[in-house]
Length: 453
Image: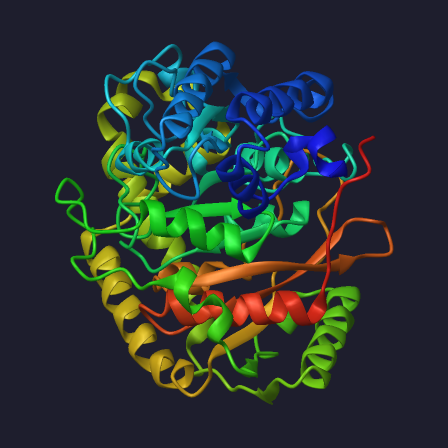
């Protein structure tokens, strides 16, 4: 099998099959990823820290378990990256900030602990924008290093696309998982708010922070989701509800009913992205999907400002004490956000919280009429330059009200950079969303790989 010459090219599902058969070892897989990092990291700068020795030691231990007949599941021996806002016991967690320089947690975030329990190997920490806001990370887009990889999960998106790891965790408070996934030509999945514990994750906004998943296939996203989702008593925002069996539902999807949302989203897309989205809709329709146009409630666009108000206040609350002592340690955009939050009245914040609930109540009936809503994933391809991570305008409304969403790579723009669509489902319907996404992925049959070799 040609892929065995470069195991880092495998998806999780492919690698898991070979590992279970003894055709591939975890040490070989991890070594392949480490070689890829060594080859490309100077150009891409995806990693804040690579735990070479720890990853190889974990791979050896997990290989022994397999030889002894103990397989933890489909993540057994799989190397993953982790955005550098997740606490990792014994490994630096700096959130891209000088104010956390040298900080080493004594415990793992719940999502990290669950990954390890499932047999995944933490390859290292991927670069993030400072405190997961807008001050850029050093990471470059692997499709063209003169362009942004997106953010705030910049390193996670670039690392998965560049075949440095098979998957990575990110986070999303605006568009920080789906946007970099779209810009890098991979799958980005954000489940229902509270579905994956945020305990041990440096917060940006407690009531909007989502743990995100970045992979190279929908199936792989479902594998990671099943491993890390579920109630966590240590997280007061954690959902105390059964986790849907997404893997079992993936191949049961009949031809889906998709609601195309032009309103708001096409207004913010460039001409190429609008044309591309229409082309993808036509291809899905020809494959058998039923597609209709959706009208959103008139106040839907207000979620953009609601997101900013809530985020600024909650960021200010988290950072207030340290910010008062070390204001100059903070970079300009996160400093501006915190200052805006400190200047926002309790009344304004309370109104934003109430308005968020009202917008969700208005849009839920629309969502229940369709298997998923479809929009562009970004305004266009990744912008040139590294001064910005691009606009989260396509994700911000759905993130604010906590709905499951996923971005799928669907082609290349005229400049050779990835394009993508976004799918959104009703609350708590991750199983349906992933099944629809899998159906669309197979119908469109798009496989992207950056020209790095």
